[in-house]
Image 1 (tube, helix red, strand yellow):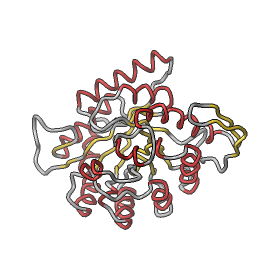
Image 2: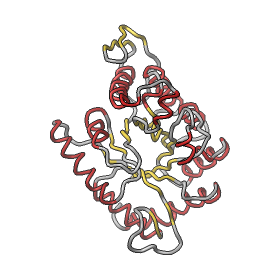
Image 3: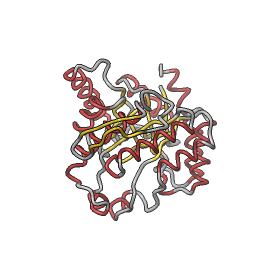
Length: 301
């Protein structure tokens, strides 16, 4: 079992981002990932915050401040950027990190942001599918041609390619707190892992069943990996019945880790926005490593 931290970059300075990433690396976490918005519309500010550093340039900077931990997006909104430019940025991160990039991809949810960027919100799923195909083609070859709905070109040169071949791992995200059949179909057709966000215990279990059924229908074996993303809220006292998954004492959270492991999770990734400030985030990162991971290991993780 591997563990990743999702950094709430809308609340962080660059120095905070570096400190949290280095703490995660020092304490044995496997990955640090960051989310994506280009502009912050009122709905995004209401749910999160106003400050959104560019994910690719931020990850490239973090690559130079770390040596082992994987660096990824959770998730890049694929329709926001030209797919070839996006593929080039991702390949560059993979190059400068020595092959440590994870490419989490989603379709986006903020319709107002699509409007500002002059993009068709209702076509975001089709755009994402085509963009992923273009990115994968670019990562595989130094010259590529493509004929699609949104892009058509011939003999386009593309280099450098990523260190990881044929491409960095592609994690397919879904809408927050929604069990999304399109994200499952996309993961089976185009991804390496299904990366659902903020699902309940019941929906996680249903989603894994749907993922395996879709893979069987598509003739894909094995099915894509399962890498859920949930809020981590470590408490001093047990929360008991009615608590959210990954909320509670270290023993309760370790039990939740064991539960998703039994569902087939390869990675578990955690949001930290339950923490009120950066010192609390740093303590949670360290506390998880010292108090949850050993307990989960005893349980078989």
